[in-house]
Image 1 (cartoon, rainbow, N blue to C red):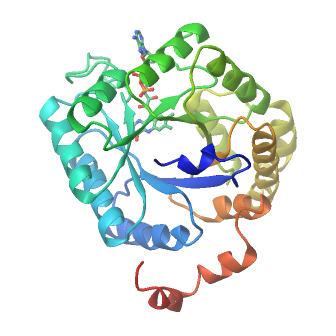
Image 2: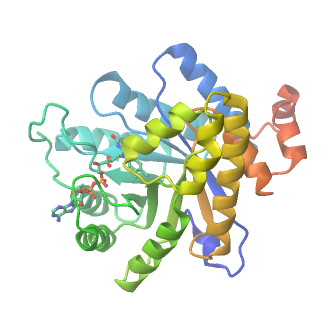
Image 3: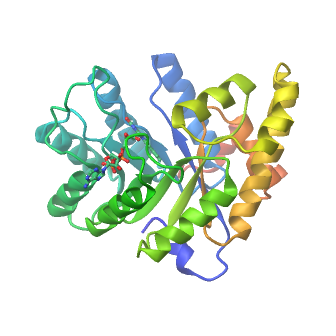
Amino acid sequence: KLLESHKEENAPATFSFEFFTPKTSQGLQNLYDRMDRMYDLNPLFIDITWNAGGRLSTLTTEMVQTTSTVLGLETCMHLTCTNMKTDLIDQALRSAYESGCQNILALRGDPPLDGSESTGDFKYAKDLIRYIRKHYGDHFCIGVAAYPEGHPEESDPVKTLKYLKEKQDAGADFIVTQMFYDTENFINWCDECRKIGITMPIIPGIMPISTYAAFIRRAGWSEIAIPKHFSEALEPIKDDDAKVREVGTKLVIEMCQQLLESKRVNHLHFYTMNLEKSTLMILQGLNLVTKQQLHDMKQPWRKSLNPNR
Ligand code: FAD
């Protein structure tokens, strides 16, 4: 459903925005305003991450309800199953269903921090996918996570691909990848996916570059390689945030152009980190949004002209 338009030959490239649950109510209100503004740029969907445990996980379902029903945005809800009993999964799915949300990114989640075994009823993401299909049929379009440079818990790339194929066999519809900057590796990985029968659309996860420290930290967390031309361009200017953003944006635009030209993908998923500037600069550089659109999204009066949104 979500990527229906991609079946058409030469369909224009599309994009989506990921947001995470903010910690304060002021942060939440600011984020709703930002989502609403950014939706004026016509992303295919927005998605909201899942924070296992406590208030933040119920906040995901509340936010999905607000973005789907109040703001009217096509929303994809992340759902993890580590430490989740079936009744909690049921509550989350029921809430998404009742909000009219039709898209779930089904994930396992990271293992408990203290090294203990998960107390959840589902071991892997594929078990969650099977459960969703069993109870909701085709209602949800189901996405899954994938790791072009490998998952920290599995060093064998052949096994990692096999496990990804198992998620497709369990009923998944599309893939969103971990962030990366090594385009060539990504393109080869897409080809490996196709060779073993993974036919789901592959959506690359794009992380904009805002500051040097954040760039290094996020690449470290995700255990991904930093290509030589990225470090050569960014390291010498690391103390000048504005310059890092400008040069980093150019590098990411170039990377996205190569991805789209490779024809392996036709959709870009932006990890916005709840900010808009860097993502918008990339979209503008790719000509996926116009200057006029960027200008219009800043006009508060615009919404009153469009009562349906
Ligand atoms: P799985 O696909 O279940 O894989 C987990 C591990 O088990 C992998 O090492 C895999 O190789 C291995 N494995 C899978 N099947 C088998 C099998 N049959 N036998 C043996 N080993 C197997 N985390 C959050 O907490 N909230 C979020 O909102 C969130 N969003 C994300 C979005 C994206 C796009 C990505 C890429 C990651 C996201 N994550 C999120 C992080 C994710 O939860 C972790 O990376 C987690 O460790 C793995 O989740 P998974 O769904 O890929 O798990």
